[in-house]
Image (cartoon, rainbow, N blue to C red; front, side, top):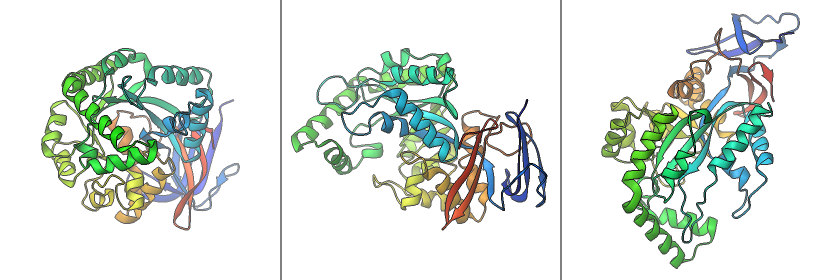
Length: 380
């Protein structure tokens, strides 16, 4: 028997407005919406809580955090995947592009070892068993400053649900780490590098960029086309870098580090994605441009939870309050990211869309998730 769910007396977050009403979904699709405060027999009375589309997360390091909760700890992968999946569902995320780095440095003092192919296979095995609560795709973070990028990307194909490939270049002295002192604090604090070890690491990365960088960047662009994936830039800092991204056909910029880069992105029709933790904390932990500054200037289109899953909904609510338009704020974590990666079946409360739906209330100004449905099935 097909399951039917009605969420009534809710503040529905529609594409362009919020209205009091009800949403009904039958099976895996939204059937219809209606206005008013009435609560039909058998419906769930939301008492004015917000009902919004399920969140779409394009860039999260959360799975990596679960498989390596501490340096040099490799947690059992199936347990890590299931814990990650459940955590995201509990924060209202119903579609995730799991970020996995490709491009390793097996030689020297390196913390970057190959893992993506094995982890992806384990993820898809659990999906085949219907063990996952939400919808998963892959986001391959192609690190051009590495030794093995070409070989690692060759291990993936169109059957791997690679929906996003981002061009990553973490060479010290540019982009995210143009201020090398910020990188030094990070490595010494997280990995215990000595002064000599840090200098050796920086020299190694710079040498890899000279030797492999241009070839790796070109290969990542070709691989994205082979997968049928959307191509994204990462940490663009200058208008010149944005122009190169535009030349590759990129339409999504992850975390531009300066206002000038964000302005150039919009000038080229490239959507700008910023981290919700940056917005919530009031600035970038790397000393880059503040997400709030871009939001106030109309230069922010999409939010990512980055390294804190619960930040996604919280950041969207803060944007709704900043802009005086909750529908616009919620769109940065629903319709806008879905559109950026070509998922036209989700991201809005509308008839015929996937029944990926969340219910939340504000408690002390912070969103508290009270229900999550993925394809019509309650998962949190």
